[in-house]
Length: 515
Image (cartoon, rainbow, N blue to C red; front, side, top):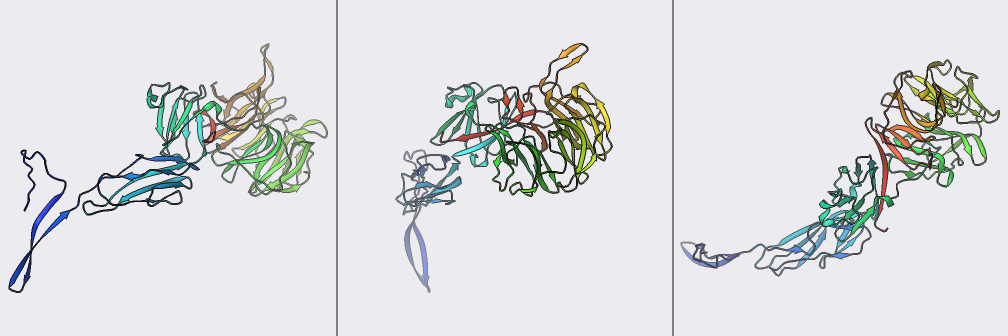
């Protein structure tokens, strides 16, 4: 039998083929026997490799491509197979890949065995990402938290403030950093409220760089209504970039907004009142293209709307407040456009259609542009035109003055319940005289909170959203949200959230590979 000489004197070494020659097989026939010798060869393993190594990333809609496998050994034929043919198909013999949709698939190449070599196989992952996508950015003055859609998992993203950064040497670029998108949030110190950055997405054969200054973030809106309904945020009507609108948008995260395709929708309007009552969305009055409105609309899903009444039983008015309290709706104060005067009356309704006058004059002064909210089993009314006081009622009939405070003097502000506190935010503060000194008024972004309506605490000044009025605030997803509004520079196009510690600008970053 031939043996492999592994001694140092054997300069050639051993062949990869191992021969077991002259294996003696005894076949016994009765008392005697006959010996047969047969040479059996154990096959060797072979190696194959792809032209493009590692994960291949493509954009949905890209042309077909080849990533063929080859090997120097063996004569067996190579065939290909895709693990998910809904994402991409591969030609069995040529290895040509056709992209069908977004997703991930594994392309397997198999080289058949021959007389000397075993079968060999090798695979690569193919990631197909959307041609356009949106990411979430929560921006502060120090950094930005990024959340990308899961379809981008496995794609590398490089960020820097250096427009001419060499990607291969990104560590030496200003604020250069690189991450592989993988489902977790990414902290980015290149892009924040103080500076823009350049984002580069690295694919197999595509490098896409975006200047964050060119990214379309959101749309401006003011004098709209925002509320929480059926596990979503909803914005209704108001002003947008084109004027008065009756558009409705909703969102499950406060970042990505979907325009609702509605039927039998109410007319364009601003300064209406929208509220959730009896498991429906309700919209009351407002100011339309032709003037004051006094109609009532409701919807069980935010899509299909029904006119409950062409006009309410209370006098037509604007800049009022309507709240849901103890299984009724309550309308408080506002500007009576018929008599051209502010009111301090209270009306209630059990069905949103039929209204009863509860009191014509409450203890607080007549006012409009005030706010009202339900907190700790009471209705609260705060500030408004020519007012800087706080009133509350446990029944909607009898009202108690809790406090009067110069800090609260304002109109067009927001009143929101969040984190077991009552919050007063922003608005327009009138000029006032204190100790003989005139304090100029204007748009405000100050933030006050209370737990009893009497003692008010002010969040110390910090850089966050710009001063504004006629915006919306709402508690959602364990955060306090600020949406749109009017500023000294026009309508605001931003959304902010507060998590009891930090304010962050909420941005939807829209990226397209067709730009």
